[in-house]
Image (cartoon, rainbow, N blue to C red; front, side):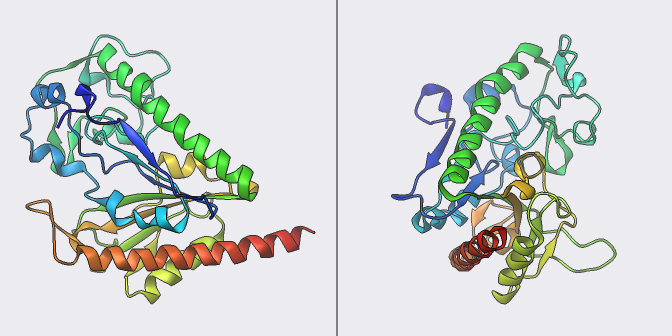
Length: 294
């Protein structure tokens, strides 16, 4: 698959018939259209390079569209460019030539190989056989990263203008071997609100409660509290709320073959119920906040 041919959009907004709820859904890591030139530059095969995908997350949350919320989804793969990073988190060891002075070369994510242009995929496998030209990395940021975030900002601004608030749900998946530190608990879903700074406590608590009612083992912020998107767009004091949601892949994907399991549609249906409950809660919450402000 090669979006360079023009057959694929870099990313797309799936719009509802009517934008009727104050939500925006975002799936930045589920892209699975790999440029041929990228595959040719990689030391990994077409299966190994997919290890960083949030497999089928865009499909898991697709019913948000029918509920009245737009869904922004990347078609480019995370291994090619990660929009859940600062725009210039770059590893100088990856590139031929000097990075611009404003590049953040010292972040923990860069050190771990997971910058804006990643060096590795999951299981710590190096992506590239050779260093990349600096201009190649910068062109991905200019041509994909910046337009993607411009689109996301526009969706959030439109939602806020229409409803007086906006709730961004940033949708991801996590490996099946994740355990809570110091225990054998394997969470099914992790809600991240940057330790209370990206969304109101009421919305975060409601999200956890609804997930638990549906039978999921759900926790908040550990080990994933939210990435750049959650941190950057969540401003609860301004009625801009952002939650990251990580779904355990082992619930719905065979992590060896990367194919959907028979449980995929059950998980999808349960998340449908979660989204509806959260939407109803936020509608009531918004009314209460409006009364409180009078």
